[in-house]
Length: 220
Image (cartoon, rainbow, N blue to C red):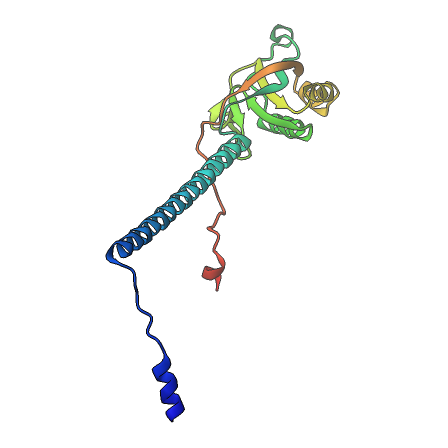
C-alpha cells in the first residue's frame, strides 16, 4: 500500500506551458487547417455533383439518341440514301385494247413489298406514302389505299432505299414480280438512283398487345 502511494506521489502533472500568443497561433493554425479541409470537402462535393449531372446528361443524351434511332428504324423520320426507283405503268396502250388502268391491286403491291424486303430493302415509299410494318394496303370501292390514302393513277412510282442498290436492281430484272405485274397487263421497271429521299410516315401509330414490364419487386 505504501509502495503504491509512493509511486502515485511521484507522478508529475504535465501542464501546458504555452503562453497566450502561442495558444492563439496554434488556434489560428487549427482554424486554417479546418477551413482548408472544409474547402476540400466542398470541392469534392462539387465534383461529385458535376459527375452526377454529367451522368444524367449522358443518360439523357443516350436515351435521345436511342429514341431517334428507333424512330428512324420504324420509318418516323425522313430517310435518304442510294436505292432504286420503280415505275409501274400499263404494259400496253389503252387505245389498243380499250382497257383502262386504275391502280395495281393490294395483293400485287403486297407481294412486291415482300419481295423487296427479301432483297434487303431498307425503306420503301409508294407514291410518297412511307411503308412501315403496320401499313395497311387494301381495296376500297375498287381503289387501292396505302396508309388509308388512295394511290394515284398510273404511272405509279415506288422509291426504295437498299443496302446494295445494284444487287436489288439486278434481282428485280429477273424477279417473279415482273411476271406477276405482266399478268395484270402492267410493266414494272427499275432504275438505280444515288440520291433517294423518302418522307417520314405521317400516320398514327397503333400499338396492340403491349403491357408494361413489371420489375422483380412487383412480381414478388
